[in-house]
Image 1 (cartoon, rainbow, N blue to C red):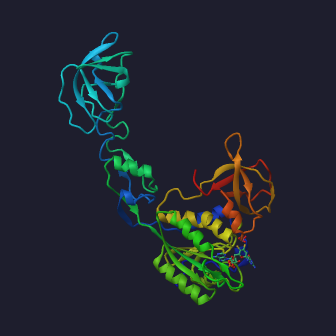
Image 2 (cartoon, protein in one colour):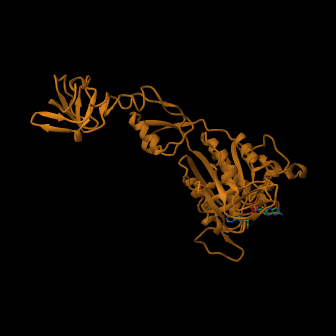
Image 3 (cartoon, rainbow, N blue to C red):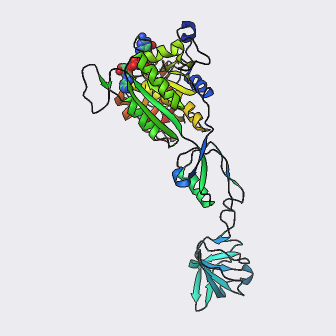
Length: 423
Ligand SMILES: Nc1nc2c(c(=O)[nH]1)N[C@H]1C(S)=C(S)[C@@H](COP(=O)(O)OP(=O)(O)OC[C@H]3O[C@@H](n4cnc5c(N)ncnc54)[C@H](O)[C@@H]3O)O[C@H]1N2
Ligand code: MOO
């Protein structure tokens, strides 16, 4: 195991007792996160959700040429003098992608949506306002305005304009913009290699037989599924490691050697079988976060093992989920090269009353029961705040943050709410 750069003595009570706020813990984790530098070039279709590594400017204007926004007739307004109706000769026909026309003499051009508008033509009259008659067209109603129904070259994106900045994740809309500019490949950061280790002799995987004293491993699939939703994450699962110091140490070394991030669950509190905490305490890592004034998740540990970021999440399922999202994920997102790294909190209204202990931030599973007259979500708290409860979190729409200074949450208070699903 690599020597720690700056070990902190997590046994030192005066130091350890000073629990830091969760946002401070997250910022400390971010501060020790090293952003990736390696990049790769991907075809657009392979790049959804990946993180842009270099700014992209458009090589062409969008649209590339003046074109018609309607099916109708391209006209020269100079030929529509005085009051209508006007009768114009139809001098040609031009469709999207078809051959252009030369420079016709007087008259209108039959034109279709997306077809280039030849120079000199300064409006398109939609066909609903025009009546063809033999080789002429009769235009009635008002005189078209200059530029009417013409999409000008570059009006969407001008030549050379910035399309995307680094540190953004590529949405389908971003990819459409790149495709519209004719950009075929995009340079993204390579995926973040994230190793996960489930520690605990009591753990069995679903499908296995459960003996007395054993439980099923739920954190493993929770983390796997969360990471599977992140296109920039390359998950490496190191399985279940029993509570044996040498085995835990070996698994940590192995994971740290091949990953940018190592996430463990379990073994971070104070018991004799909490080997992750013991390994860290004995200098197996530099530890930045040891004691956070939050519930659940107080014993979460963040540090570095060799070059890898280390996130030691508590074993209780809610504590694992909350500390992963609130403390570890911002740092992992920073490693991925993302600019926007912190949880996206939304304002919401408490639909519940709850007595809490002041001095620590609580993160509780909540369900949205409706919206108030200003459109803000109204939240109902689920479960009794047990950090071991799987059912409350499964029914929740998201997590509400109950601030440290409050002793009681009253109905009608404004809270911060992080929905599990964006939007
Ligand atoms: N004397 C103290 N005991 C505890 C403290 C403390 O400060 N002093 N803190 C409590 C808090 S808060 C939490 S949270 C837990 C954290 O425990 P560990 O991270 O050391 O985790 P374990 O003891 O290994 O497990 C806790 C709990 O979670 C279950 N578990 C573990 N892994 C999984 C998994 N992959 N899937 C589902 N469930 C899992 C495990 O069986 C335990 O029941 O410590 C308190 N104790
Ligand atoms: O952090 Mo623990 O989850 O409060 O039980």
